[in-house]
Image (tube, rainbow, N blue to C red; front, side):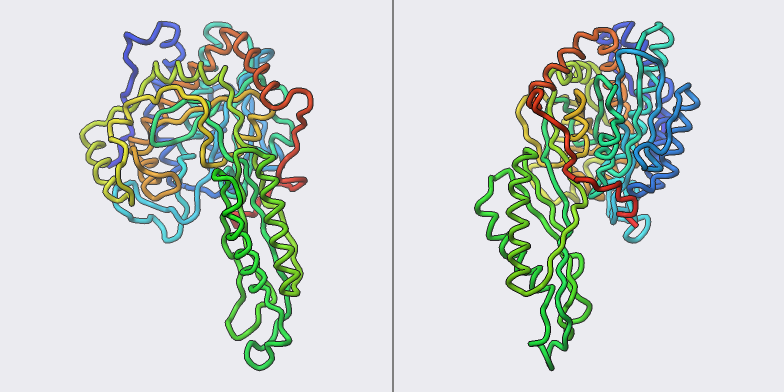
Length: 474
């Protein structure tokens, strides 16, 4: 049976009356937020199709006095919820989409709810609701204490895969008048250090050849699959000659229909990642050369389509220090007896040794500067146009990887929901600090200006002029 009532409060001896005032709404509504996150977990809607998820979040925000702008950036499920007016304006991000093939019951053994169905393997069911909880709590505190300024909750669809929803919001200048952005993400630890991520680009390479009978007249054919394989071989040879942090991965999406026909059409999808946008561009150009060479050598025609492109996260230490202070104040996640049993059982299914101790969920990682990260996120684009800070909380049992059925299971029960509540509280306290002392925001803006290259910087989407790929999950 899933737990929906989460009586998990921080130690009152560490929380001031002013801080407890902003946490009051979250504390009183924990059960409701748990139910909302479970409902979204059940729906598990794909990117750009989060219709019910978006509607549920909007309804909760409208009920609590926010003004809603729907269909932002030509994306039907994107929205901006606003309360207040004037300076400063604090933005809070809320992701919504699920992942394909990860359908799973909220139990510590593999059991899909639906075969090959979607599942919240990255915890966006928690992400969206936790951010909404933080925004509402901040709004209630602003009203009660007559705080000047604006709070904006930005509902951002399709973070996963080639979705890149936030990149289109950045291009539409949704973040133009926002002074600072706060976000969070599910994880297997509690961490608010100013980490970076990898810039990336997803590209589909298509080769067109000539079909022919593979046995009777092979000389009349030109194999598009040969071109794909030639490209892959050259790129694999190239791996020896890129920096260790670079990541290149591919999947053949179409290799022909039957072995006795020379394939006249083939497609391979490539993702190129690097710690910087410039480094990614350089590696991507080399991959392009391999594609061109493969077409030349096999006498086929190559074309390509950039599906998505994301900047690396630009860490902002000024904001991160404030976020870290508040995460340490809230603390980690304490498991009850049933949750400990769940954690022990699910860790047995993880194909790795030397897993972090279970009680790491109840600890906060020390502040650390310099981690490049190994994943990618469209929050990176946001971080280049507005000062941004984020955190992760232990919504997954320590040792459980992202994008796994184990993560889905954790996201659908009390362990994930406890992590969500801690994230909401941390963001709400951080927003309070920024509204109370705007000098932190101004310092963060200076840091952003300097780190992105001063007046020479001009934001250009790494996805080019592409429109939101609204059908990429269909």
